[in-house]
Length: 545
Image 1 (cartoon, rainbow, N blue to C red):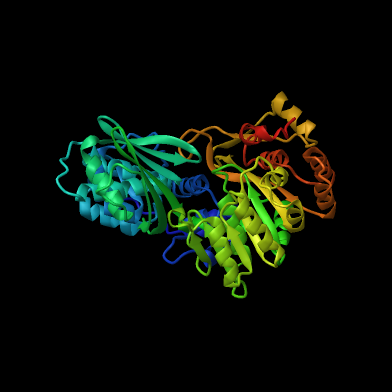
Image 2: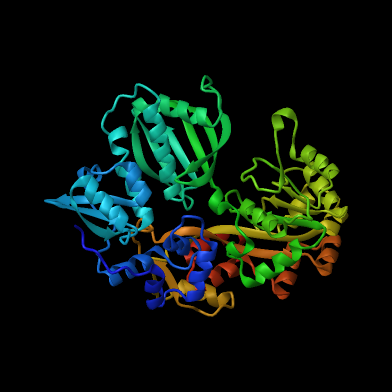
């Protein structure tokens, strides 16, 4: 039988290692989901990292930890158990020798799983520690090998069902935003967009293409007989017990229909303002402006900068029983309980403008318009703000202050803009330094120059050396940097007198506005990101100069 260890509570181990406090343990226990283990709850709530958990278990229990990203998993060992058992207990056999079976486990104190393994396989289990994320990725990698890599003939839909399920499970485990299924001449590429970057994770045999495309279309309610025209659909499913919304897009290409699946993870979608990495200064200001009964608040930035997430965060903050919130979106990304959401449908004439007009007859307090794209929508949104409604929307501009000329260019009467505009927040997404391999390093001369020029103290900076958790990249996850431009009476006078953007920007800076570059530098000083990332997303605003 496998060696047994003295039963110790995980919370006690973490407390004795000075990683968390008793108060944090109690908070995690209070907020954890039904059936969720304490370790998973602490990870989900950000009290500990995977590396901290692994290190504590390794040191306290004397069990070796392994990095599955580099470990040569023996497929014969993995086949000793079913995929279902592996997923249920978050473990995977990685090696077998004589009578021993080495098993990577996220929880090596799960003695029931160890006993079940030994009874089922006849081996003596030797547990090693690996991160939950790595184990799930390995399960999806090694248990789909037989189906897609060994030339199994596809005679019915069952293999396609299993393959698609595993593709989705891998996407969720990787925290991917999109999955690309790309038919080539002799195979199919499966690529995942993680933290804004696409990477190929696997290649499927060409023979599964037709069944896989048909399965995806059936799942998302698309026409399986139509392969010459693009189609769009959506579906809500559970993946490993997590509710997921999928937005599905098909596109006819030379070698078959390419499919992109946008993953909308409902378990992490509804972020509160405290989870959006707003600085304390920005959070205080933003909470103040969204509590006003009327006016228009804009979130600006390019596509993929997290604007919708911030809008939903604001909605979450102000949504309660006494408030009627109505949205008009294209598309409706997340379905929110208690919110009346309208899906734009241009094919039948339901545009942003038409939807917005109808909303005004629904006695709303708060209106969210997914995007202001044209003059008609801008004018209706602004007039709505002037008639006692709080309007939240997005706009494509490089900076917060650039929203002013953008609205003027839409040929909306200047006095309407001046009277209604309350605040504009611009944001960008930057990659976060991996918390598991983050290390301090000396500041370069270029970095020193930028910090000094922006009147910041020169800090110690951090970078990720690369580890299994971040796949050697040094970054893991993304966060937003912000700038918030609040419209006061002086700015309104400047707008009415047609003052230039440079003059307005100078006034804003003199009155303490924190620009994107400065918020980015603050987050660098906190060790959250790097100057390389900040400059990548703010260079076009010329704020660095």
